[in-house]
Amino acid sequence: MVTTESSLRRTFAIISHPDAGKTTITEKLLLLGRKIQEAGTVKGKKSGKHATSDWMEMEKQRGISVTTSVMQFPYNDRVVNLLDTPGHEDFSEDTYRTLTAVDSALMVIDSSKGVEERTIKLMEVCRLRDTPIITFMNKLDRDIKDPIELMDEVEDVLKIKCAPVTWPIGMGKQFKGVYHILENKIYFYSTGQGHTIQDIDVVEGLDNPELDQRIGSLAQDLRDELELVLGASHEFELDAFLKGELTPVFFGTALGNFGVTQMLDSFVEWAPSPLPRQTDSREVDASEDKFSGFIFKIQANMDPAHRDRIAFMRIVSGKYAKGMKMKHVRLNRDIQVSNAVTFLAGDRANLDDAYAGDIIGLHNHGTIQIGDTFTEGEAIKFAGIPNFAPELFRRVRLKDPLKNKALLKGLIQLSEEGATQVFRPFNSNELILGAVGILQFDVVAHRLKEEYKVNCIFEPVSVNTARWIECEDEKMLEQFKNKAGENLALDGGDNLSYLAPTRVNLNLMQERWPDISFKETREH
Ligand code: G4P
Image 1 (cartoon, rainbow, N blue to C red):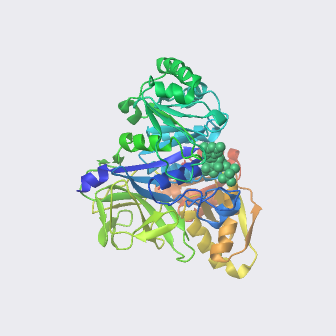
Image 2 (image 1 turned 120 degrees about the vertical axis):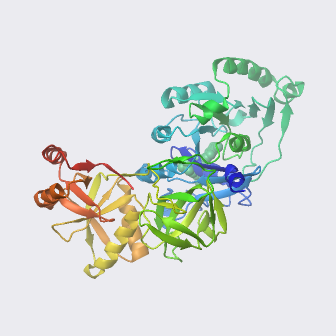
Image 3 (image 1 turned 180 degrees about the vertical axis):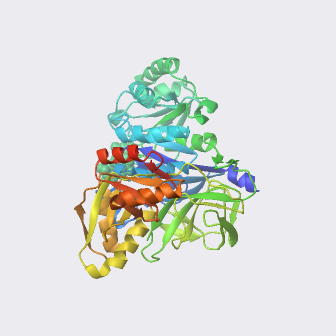
C-alpha cells in the first residue's frame, strides 16, 4: 500500500524566467486538477488580484512570488505535487533548496523571447542532480520565434536534447493548434476559452483530408515542415528523459489554456515517481517501509492569523500517519507529530497520512532547521541541502531601542528561512544582516514591521563576505578565536562565522590559518 501510494506521486517544480508564464500555467494546472473552479478568478499582477499561489503582503505589493508554496492535486490516477518557487533572482537560494525536494521540473519558456538568463541558472541547478525536465513553449498566441530556432536555442544554450512531442500550427493571430506527434492527432485551438477546461476539438491523422478542409493550405505547410522537423530533431526516449539528457517539448498558450493538457497528460505518465535520496551513510529508497524525510524550507508567519512557523518536509520513504513518533536526528530526540499540515496555496488542512514524494508542514517552535532529517529511528542525515554565504551586508538599526528583543527574535526566525543570515559580532552589540540578494533587505524590513511590530533601518557596514568557521582541533580554534575575535560573530543558529571586511583580508586569513576551514556554504 505504501509503495503503491508513493509510486503514484509526481513531485515537481516549475523553472522559468520571470514573466514567462509560471503563475499562469500553475493556475491552469490547478484548474485541470480541479482544485479551482475557474481560472481568471486569480488574475495577474497588474490587475491587483493574485494567483492563489502568491501569499504574502510583500508579494502583492511587489508583484513577485517570494515564498514557496505547495499544491497537491490528483490527475489521471496520479497525485501531483507542485512546488511553487520564487521567481525573482534575489530569492534563488530558496529556489535551489526547493529543487532538492523535487523529482522533475517543468521548464516554461516565453517563445517570443527564447531561453532567458534565469532559466539558464535554474537549469544549472537541475543539472546537479540530473533532474528530468519537460519543456513548455508558451505564448503561441503571440508572434514568437521560429519553433525550430527555439529548439536549437534550448539545445545550444541549455545543453539538453529536444524531442518535440507536439508541434505548433501557426502562431499569433494565426495560431490554429498543435499536432501531437506521438498520437498522430491534431488538436485545435479556440480563443477566449482560457478560463475553463475546454472540450477537445481533434482531427485524427496528419493525412486526414478533414485537416485540409479546416485549415486550408496550412495543412500542407504543416506536413512539409514536420518532415523537416522530424528528420532534424530527436525522438522522445523515456530513458534519456529520466537521465536528464533529453527534454520532451510541448507548445501552447498558458493564457489560452491550450496545449497544457497534452503536456500534463504526458508529464504524469513519464515523470519519475519519488526518487531515492542520498544520506551520509546510505541511499534511501522511496519504497522502504520506514518513514524518513528532510526539511528544505522554513517559513515564519505564513498565516498571520496563526503566527507560527512551518517547516516544509519532503517525505523520502515510508508513510506519515497522524500521531506518529519520529526521530529528530540532529537533536537525537523523539517527537510525536499529530498536527502536520498540507497546503493548497495558502490554505492549509490537517492531514491524516502522507507518502514518499509528498510535502508536509510541521509546526516549528524553533527546534527545526533547514536540512534536518526525521526518521523512524535510524540515525541518518540527508545530504545536499545547501546554505550559501551571503554577499551583501547591512547593520540593522532599530528606530525604537526598547524593541531590541523583538528585533533579535524576528531576525533569528526570519533567518531560519534561509534567505538571510543574522550575525551577532563578538565585540559589539550590533546586529548585522547578510543576504544573497538586495531585495531581501526590503523584505526583512517589511516583515519585521508587519509580523514583529519592529521598525528598523539598514546602514552600510564594512563587511564584504562571510564564511562559516570549522576546525577539528579545539586548541587551534581557541587560538584563532583570540586572534580574529574582532571579525568573528555567531549566526542565527549559533554557528561561528568570520565576517571579512575585504576579500584581501579573507585571503590573508586563509593563508595564515591553513587548518581552519572557511566555508562558503554550510550544509545544514
Ligand atoms: P511569471 O509567473 O512567470 O512571472 O509569469 P505570469 O504567469 O505572471 O505571466 C506573465 C505575463 O504573461 C502576464 O501578463 C500573463 O498574462 C502573460 N501570459 C502568460 N501566458 C501567456 C500566454 O500564453 N499568452 C500571452 N499572450 N500572454 C501570456 P501581464 O500583462 O504581466 O499580467 P496580466 O495581463 O495578467 O495583468
